[in-house]
Length: 281
Image 1: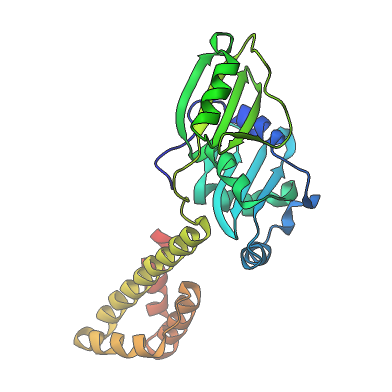
Image 2: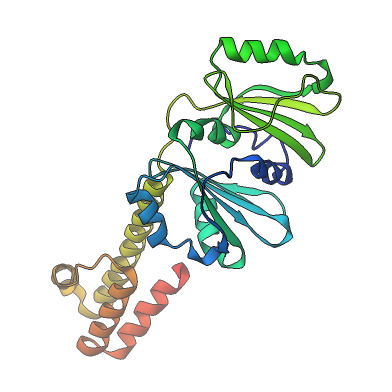
């Protein structure tokens, strides 16, 4: 994840969810379909198709979720919750678990349109909480144009607000910036200077690390059982078992070793095996 967290710590999750309604929706792939369609297979298809755009999830109670894709890479995942929000791989896993409760829409974007959107959650804060009425809008727009600014300007007014997005100093999508602001607070957040890491790759790495950790637990439990029942012959027996059972699926390995212990040692060996595993289940 990027060290910068955009507006995540500066505006409420309710407002962030509200701002998602201002993302461009002119080129839908699907709209308001059952959220359970966001399967791993669909994500892999989007990846293979080099999809550029975003997924918007809607849950009961006005909660929102968001996935941003850039040429098939998942740059951001965000999930509004009852008491806060989730982001990154944690949000991605939550969305996959919970989307059956909501609806899903997918919208295509041009590749250059993605960085300003990602600025909301991974951008660099340039201005935050400034009284909107004190800002000379014309001067601000000139400044953004001169520096070729890419990012988002957000107006916060309680639990509602408005967002305008910029790419290389030019306003993107529809919606004019008012000539003046009379109330509210302004935030300016700049897009990341380099592409964020691919969350899908991070999810795979986390899954592999979890599998490896669980496999180690299973083999350590098996070693303790062998020591109990075979004494000095435990280590050679363990090496033979490792050569026979090469699966990287912890559940399958547990099942195979439990069967072997029942058949080759005695049922109590399998009981001890389960007791050693239970604290980590």
